[in-house]
Figure (cartoon, rainbow, N blue to C red):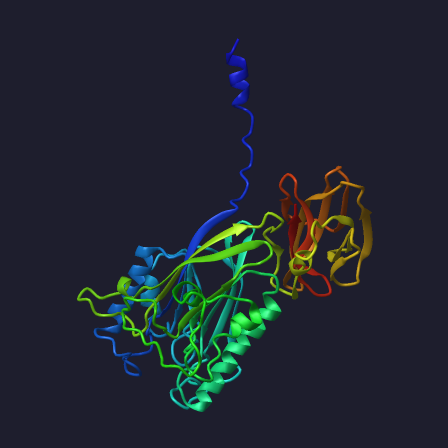
Length: 439
């Protein structure tokens, strides 16, 4: 008699595992000295092709989560041939065509962009020879955990024109963060050519304008940055201490949906040596370990759709509401999803998209939540957009707009959570959409 229940249990599907709410990862910033040897030896012994191969092998050996490289110019093919990270940016070319900026990662990403500096200077070196600048990518660290990663290589030199150009470079990145990373966790790391001790350099801009933290200052200097105009805190290469300052730097911040914490900062030069003990690059690689944890108040789904339109994020506004409750949702559409709008019980409304299509509104009852959404995407004018959205409440009622396609996903809130806002891209229609869940 006991065999029947046991047999029946074998046919019961297992529950879908909830995504992790905490984990760790690390990042490495490394200027790999990839300028052609005839242009710059970088004062590194040995053959550059051989050294680059060794760097790539060590990237694989240590299996860093995300690596930003700078000066990855004419030995790029050798670097990639010796590395096995599953996600890697395509090179923009050697000197003088490429920026030398690339990323090697264990995590996939969306929205990759290369941006050239608005200002460069040739006062001390040939910074205008190549299209130096910065890159942007939205990295998927885990389900619903997307972090905006920036890689940069700022103007070098100490002439007045160099310092002016470098300050412009960092301001350009800071402004971009303010425009395109609103409400998102952010990591900026690369070769800044900046020092806190150098008068005229502005590495503090990411702290003052973007609410970011420098883990070197946080973990090695007890949170107190060096004073401009004081003596430089020069490092050996490799360095045996983190009390010194290099121009290779990292900044980070979390978001209302994600806590991001640096747990260890180190100069990793001793991990990148030739067989005879010589260095592989004239830069100390910077290695930082991070912990992340999802908020107990607000969380975000993976987005769905295309990389077009203007970025939007309701998280900053939702973070000021103690317990966001939705009173109504409006979807507008025809052949595609034209707009989404959600009103909270406080009267605050979040609207994204255009004015086309037909609008339909669902008013929620007391205690009713938005618990599930189906989103379909397709191509229009050769651009991926959201064609359809259907949202279901905890009472089984639903609202929809647009037309379904063969490319659809379903996003479901965990028990006790509900959709309270949106994140994505839009213009005259909705190009991409993700959901913000409130508990």
